[in-house]
Amino acid sequence: LLKLADRLRELTNPSDLAYAAAEILGQTLRVSRCGYGTIDLAAETITIERDWTAPGIKSLAGVLQFRDYGTYIEDLKRGETVVFADAEKDPQTAGTADILKTISAQSVVNMPITEQGGFVALLYLNHATAREWTSDELSFIRDIAERTRIAIERRSAEDRLRTFAGQLEQMVARRTGELVHSQAR
Image (cartoon, rainbow, N blue to C red; front, side, top):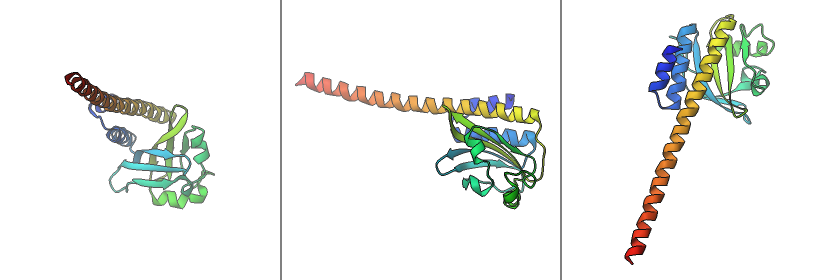
């Protein structure tokens, strides 16, 4: 958590913040892949800009359809974390276990990120083989997810404020110019 706090302080780009959290989680928990993606609820897709992967594991960067990998999207929409130790044995993924194993995701944690009550992003951890997830690991993942969400929201708010300040500065300059021109006439 200290390592994450240090990284979050030094980074400004939301994508870099999400990657730093994924990298720390992936290395700490020794999983195959970890990432953060934005959600389109209507299309039931996740857009992954980049993810952290262990050596030999392919990235999932791109747009993925949730229903291609199981029937757990409704749980995520309700804000519930989806955890399965073995895709072959979980009823929501048994029918798609071969596909999940092909992408090195036989064992998964999908933790929804919500903002203002809506499901907007997902922090995910994949492991290439069956793996039990302990309650301590899930608590750690939840803590990382929350800290990352807050940092991303703060950076986004700072960006909006900078944009607004720039627009306000331009408006003041324009209005001042108009007043000077008006007084000169």
